[in-house]
Length: 348
Image: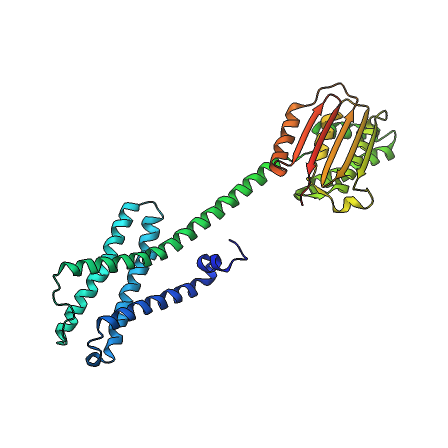
């Protein structure tokens, strides 16, 4: 619901329910009092203050019909798709009101021995007049029903939107990049094997792994993280790889409109996205070159490796699904032997 637009909030928000009913009551009172004073204008001196009782009775009848439609017919028939019953009941209701009005006037004038303004109550023109009055009553009653119908539709749309958002969030949680189980197993085995010979190195491996896991478990629960945090996580990943395989060399460069010390503090990206891409590339590599370049709000990520093993299509497919959810129509992902490039149009 648009918080900057008062009219939709006034018509549909529960906060203004009492005011809406008061305005409805005021409008009905004005209409019915006007009709009564016109109908009995020739007899006002005789009726005196009793004319206000007639006004209140007519207003109560219209109000009862209005609320009967609002609280019973609309929720039980209109909103449940039982349109035939609703239309039939509504037509009967709006035709009964003017009929009762004419019958009441006839009985009141007879009981008080007042002159009749209608010469013949069986005249076909009376039926035409009743139909015209019924049409006006129908418009008023339908106006209230439309407000209730639109409010119900808005609530359902909000509920559907909330469910869709929860579904998308669930899908994102499934697709979020994670540290490969093979990498975890390899690191733990390496730390275990080094525990006796070089306990300091084993301790360093476990500490770096703990930092990486803590980043995955806690920082990555957010929708966006600082690019600097992503780069630090990649550094930890490669440092662990080097501790297990000292022959591995890597380079991480940041270019363009961002600097590692300053600019990355205001550049936000999806968490663990680049980690997933790097793990696809460096499975059997000994050299990895990672480059970040920001220009005109477009972040370009390139990863080059000397490995010969083909890229994991299943992993890349999951990354593409995640990009479709988080960066729809704002990314391009290209993969070639030995190189992978991702371009992201960052959030404005």
